[in-house]
Structure formats: structure tokens, C-alpha cells
Length: 111
Length: 114
Image (tube, rainbow over all chains, first blue to last red; front, side, top):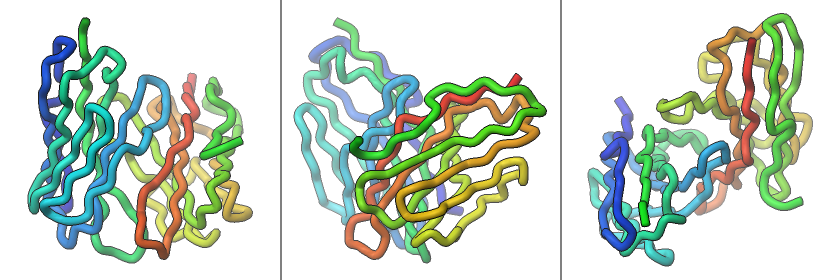
């Protein structure tokens, strides 16, 4: 069964304390892994797409990496404005663009 | 307007009401989606339209009825909803038949069913 699991469910960091979020997946024929950021009461905001193992993408304090079974979202020296829920989604081989989402990691960065 | 817009942003309705959610995408995409997001649960895909044709109806109760009159507009018609249908309803769009599959989301409609 195709499945996406994110851990931890919630993470509290002090400002400047680097950490990583995990997204593990069991899908056949991965055709893309996506990271989104979601602020309370708003729609998910697209961050990164990763297509193959070994690929890395960076944006400001965020860096996403991909292996054959999981992806990490590394947050370097986070700031309070990085507080949000981070969602991971996987597209598997199929007839149309269907994404399976994880439940997300709620990140809180305190000053 | 840019990106994906949704109206209304908030909606409160009784169980016997009929209402509609509207989504419009300004990205030139050819696929549109409805998702339901409940507290602490993953996004649930409800409907997919590709080239204005419904390609997925993810076992959604008939009290939810989608409509896609063209590639830029998507509606979700609601009738005789239940309190457990209260959630954030998100619309998204993407460009199918391309090498990029990112879906871009609207701000959502927060629905409360009394």
C-alpha cells in the first residue's frame, strides 16, 4: 500500500537550533517528492520538488534531500518566522497527477 | 489576481442548506483538484479534473458535487452536509502532461456545518 509517514509529529526548536524533518515513503515507482509549508488557516505553499535519489534543493535556511526510501528537510539556524506545518507529498506512477500527503510536522521556533 | 483563488474564505451553513465553493486558477494549468483537510489528518483528495474531465472521485459522498465548466474554474456544490464535514477545503491546480507535477494551492475555504 502506498504510504507517506512524517516524523516527528511536532518539533519545538530554539531560534538558531538546526534540525531535520523526516518523510519516509513506501510507493512503487516514485515520480516526485514534494515539500510544502502551511501556515495556520492557509493553503499549502510549494517549497521543493525532488525527483531522484541523491538530489538536493535549497532555499534560504531550508535544504531538502532525497534517498530511495525517505526525504529530509533540513532547517539551518531557524527563525521564529519558520514556524509552520511542513507537509511532504509523493507522486507515484499512475495515469494522472495524484499526490499522497503525509500528516505533516508542526514546527515551532521560539526566540 | 494571481495564483489560485477561492471564495468564500469562510462559510457557516446548516445541515439543510445548499451552498457552493468556488475556485479559480490564473496559472494556465489544465488540471484542478479538491482536497479536504481535517485537523491532524493528511490532506484527503476528493476530486480531480484533467482537461475539464473528472478523472477521480475518491469515494466522496454524493452530498458533495463538483463542477468544472472550464480549465480555470472549479466548483464544489454542497447540500445536506453533516457536522463531520466541517473542515478546510482546498483547491489546487497543476499542469498535466509536463515534466513538472507541482500542485499549487489556494487559501482554502473554512467550512463549518452546524
